[in-house]
Length: 112
Image (tube, rainbow, N blue to C red; front, side, top):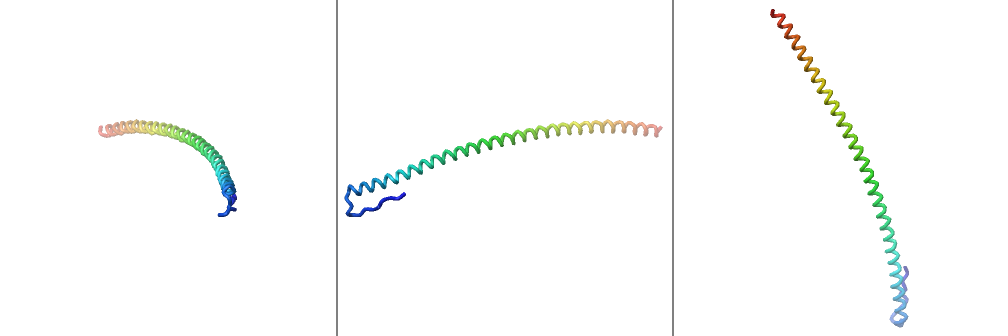
């Protein structure tokens, strides 16, 4: 932007006013150009932010679904493991009882 400062104290008022008016118009035109560029950049930035928010929400949803699936799978595995532990404990109690019964029978036989 080039402003015209080609006047001095001897410049006639009518000529001075024309120069000042042209300078103000140049400043206003430059300002309006920057406002327009700013508004365009602002819209582009808002679109980029909106796209980023959508992408992150989508990624968060996929991650949440993956975590829930993993948690469900681990819960089922834990339940199955718990059932096997309970079954093993039950079988061992039965075996211990049977062994105690046999030992009791052997001891009773040995004392008689």
